Image 1 (cartoon, helix red, strand yellow):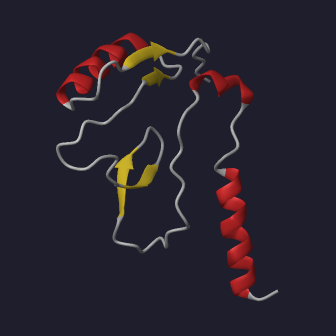
Image 2 (cartoon, one colour; image 1 turned 90 degrees about the horizontal axis):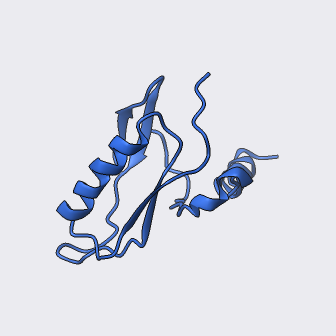
Length: 114
């Protein structure tokens, strides 16, 4: 196989893999924004510190300037600080003028740290 064919197959495989989610997290009904593959040298890629590694990301707009973003619910995943996160998110929702009501709920999946 040529490199171009392999690259195309890899891109398709990664697109499908990004849609697979463990059933234990189905209650979260998250939205995933999946783009075509982006070259590692692309200037749009930023990096943030994770607990154990750098995490690449690409910023994009969810709404135009001045437009209220309609998010029905934000579910906070398992974490030792769920209630602190819930308080912080409540402030962020007000600050960013998300269209009301925006429900902030806690995942019922227990947090486990290895």
